[in-house]
Length: 100
Image 1 (cartoon, one colour):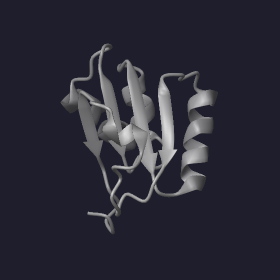
Image 2 (tube, one colour):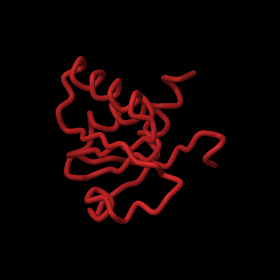
Image 3 (cartoon, one colour):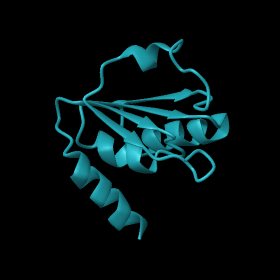
Image 4 (cartoon, one colour):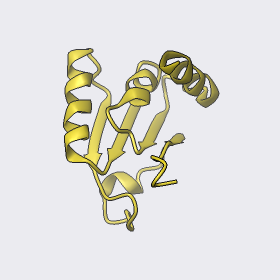
């Protein structure tokens, strides 16, 4: 089911190699890694530092180098973060049930 869900998200985003994508609530980078295989760059943001560290390690282990991960409380104003002021071509917003 996970593979189908990830494939469908990548398909719907229609990511191109020249695009930058912002993945909010990226968790372990489940979608982030798949998107990064097609995008020029991906920025993943998650509130849990342990998940971000695991996502970084997953990217390294899979040879994915066009991803940046950041830790931020996404229930608060994010305008102070540099990554939030970048103009992205696509956005994936996949909050946990509590964040929805």
